[in-house]
Amino acid sequence: MERKEFTVDGVVEETQWVEHDGRQFYTHEFRAQNPVATLLIVHGLGEHIDRYDGLARELARAGIRTLGFDQRGFGKTGRRCGRLGDNEGLTCVCDDIAFMSQQVALPDVPHFLLGHSMGGLNVLNYVLLHNNDRHVRGVIASAPALLPGRPLIPPSFVVSLLHQVARVVPSIQKSTGITVDMLTSNEAERTRFNGSVENIGHCTLGTLSSVLRRGPQVIAEAPRFDTPVMIVHAVGDKATDYAGSSRFFDALPSDLDKQYKEVDSEYHELHFEEDIGPGLIAEYKQWVLDRIS
Image (cartoon, rainbow, N blue to C red; front, top):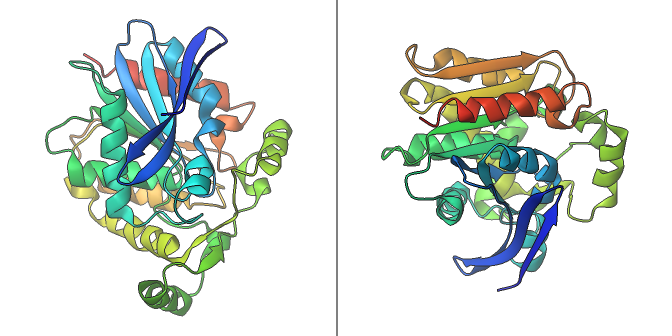
């Protein structure tokens, strides 16, 4: 296995290629001294896990051992194995989350999930389907892709046609329609995003169909959601619609440990906003730490 260990800003990190399901997955771990919790980060559509280095280091400094990985079809994993933009279906995605959780989890240490955008949908879906044994203590969903952003919503007949074509030829590629100006106002981050070959602006019809189909289903299944959850969304988000998060939260059980934070912003990646990100990351840390006992 290709493995590299190094230290950045006092945090010991390790990148490694891990074999799973006939694929090689790129992983990035951020170690914590005397960890009090473990956490898996699941990235969004068209991006890669190394964009979360700053967030993960802050979590590790707080005692939260953190692991991220490039999903099937994306980042370094996608370039080495499989087809770029192809998640191979949500059943595979759930299996990957379970496997990667096992890689970072520790005995008798609470485990958490954090997902952004498509990754936010993925972690909510995973907990709905696979957390009967409560191995996930809590989940954070940042701008989850429960509904597409309003500028990206195609007519209903187009969505119906997309699902039909995806069943026959799921490998056809389509633009996501997401542009860097939707993501963040942070100019340095925009430059990094545009300069990285690991970020792509397309995905397969199979991937797009799975996200568009499962998002509304997850909203409908919110009444049976039973894992502590924190949801964060910008009201002006153009990539994913905050209304999906609002509807999901409103349908959650009344006695569930739940938190919903609407932010007055138009940007999709709030963790990169210079006036919002540091405080938001601090809230993520505290939310996890408050739930480890």
